[in-house]
Structure formats: C-alpha cells, structure tokens
Image 1 (cartoon, one colour):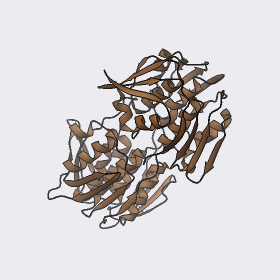
Image 2 (cartoon, one colour):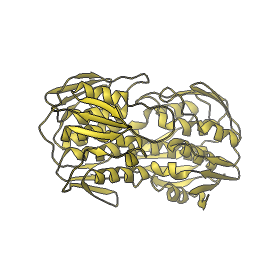
Image 3 (cartoon, helix red, strand yellow):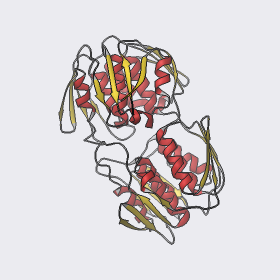
Image 4 (cartoon, one colour):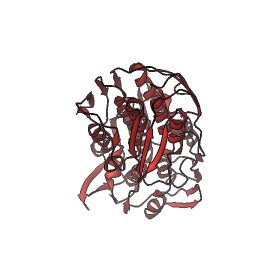
Length: 420
C-alpha cells in the first residue's frame, strides 16, 4: 500500500475542476439494471467505488465500457440476480442493486454491504420500504433474499432514527418504478443525488414527481428504456476544495460547481467571516488569515452534510475560538479526532459532540485514514501544517476523490506517494 506525503505550509493557487458526484453515479449505474436497452452515463468520475460498481454490473450480466468519463452499459447474454459478497462487501452503495434486481427479476440475492468504518449503518429502512411494496424478505448467511411475484404501489413512511436515508430512498424508488400502481414515499431523502437519480429514471420512462422534496410520488410503468444522462457535480468535492483554499490561505477558482447544493456550508462559512464570489458554475475562494469559530450540527439535506463534518473540523482546528461540532447522522463518525490531535489540534470528544479549541498552526505527523472523509480531513490538515505529514491507508481517499493528487499538484501543493 502507498502513503501520501504532504509538505505543508504552501498556499494553494490556481484552478480546479470538480468531478461528477460519486453519490449520484453509483445508484445511477445500479439503475441501468432496470432495462435491457443501452444506457450512456457521462461525467463519471474514475474512482475506486465507481470501478467496484462496474464490476458488480458485469457480474450481473451487463456489458460495460468505461472511457474518459463515459460509461456505456448494455445487456449481455446472461443475467444474474445474485450480487456476491466479495464485491458488495467493499462498498456500501452497492447495496442499491437490491431494488433494481427485485424489480426486473422478481427476486434478488444481495450481500449485506460494507464500506467505511464510521459506525453502524443498518439497512432496516431499505427492507421496510421494499417489504411495503409486497416483497418477502429473508436474511440468510449474510445475504438478503428478496422475492415478489408482483410489486404493488403503496404509501411508505421512510423516516429513521437519524432522519431520512439517501440509499434507502434510492432503493425503494428503484423498486417502485416498475410496481403496479402508485407509490408515495414520505420522509424521502431530499439530497441532490436522489434528485439526480430520479431525473435519470424519468429519462428511462419512469413517472416520478416530487424528487428533491420529502414526498416523492411514483406511478409504476410496465418497462423502462435506455437513456443518456450527465451526472451532477460532486458537492462534497467542491466543498472540500473550498476548505482547502481557506485552510491554506490560498486563492483558488473552483469550476463545475452547483452553488445551490452548498447552501448550509456557505452559510456557516459566512458566519466564520468568509466571502465567496460566484460566477456561473464557478466559485472564487480567497483565504482569510484568521476566521471565527462556528458551531456545526450535521443534518440531512439541506442541513450541514455529515460528509463535510471532518473537513470542517480540520478548518476549525486552526480557527480562532472554540467550536462545537455535533454529529447527528453517524454519532460515531469521529475517528479523525485522534489523528488531528496527533498533529497538535486541541479537540475533545463528548458523545456525539467534538469541542474544538483553535490553535495557530498544526504540525506535520504520521497519521492514518479511517474512512473516506476522514482521509480528506487529514489531507487538509497536512496542507496547513508545518513540516511533513504522512497519511497511511490512502486507498480510502481514492474511493471518493478523482485525481486528487494531480489536482493538488496543479494548485501548487507538494504531495507525493511512498510505499508503506
């Protein structure tokens, strides 16, 4: 395995382009299982997770081509309804093949998922919604076995203990598009990635309304056709570049951004004293020498995203004052705290809260990434720190940030890889 070495203390300057959204493209690729016709997906990021999903599609009988951000998915000679443990266990989002497989083949056998170690993330909401549509669900030897001679539209409340679920909404929506009659999903996830999936399904011939709101209505259709679709920009990558510019006191133009998707982050940065210039789909970020500490609570969209909690903590660790960061989506998502403290940060965890006392500067140190967003947090900390930071287990980073090493170098950062 490689580790990433960062020589800190360099201001980032230049331009960077945001890639397609990881959390959009994965369920969109899964949705191609709903048809035998050819689908073309554009602006697909080249990521470890993308490659994992393409392997799953091939294992299920699809013919897949991936070149220069374009994925073509076509029907193969043989189809399968079994998603194997070796593939699904590497990535949680792959569990969203359950809905499409059940819709098409009236049965599905899908391994329980894997992914980042950020606390318990059950699939109960997925199963609740699919059961409501008429499926019989059993769990056997680590697999979900789902069967339904006919799925029927119904009214489903999909709220959970920590709010709505993006992947559960995706799975139920894809189960319902070929069901008989009308399905109403209450407490649906409102994330832009869910809206993007619904828009793709509509291009395939589905009849979905209300996407982007807590109530989604789906009128079942008999079949879906192939379609062409461009994936939305990745709002978490865009937000990470914003923090990178700020934490290095840099001057960065970020291209291919949907400003509307960043409302909660931009609001909090405004409280901290940041001014962001927007022109079209670009944002211009100029660093401020010292920002104000702000309190943050993660919530489902349009609230502050849990996927930006770690990166924001890195920024607050070098910001004047004391901030309290509360994690309400995944209360155990604080494995980066110990690593930041190794770099000199003053952070104390109390249950779902992290109390961050800002310091003047972090110090480079050997650290270990525990998950995708924690790895981004440590990269940001390394950019701002004095001396060298060595980040182990950077394969986490490759799951969600396309070409991050080359993009950092283009902005002037000194980063390189070394063998563990």
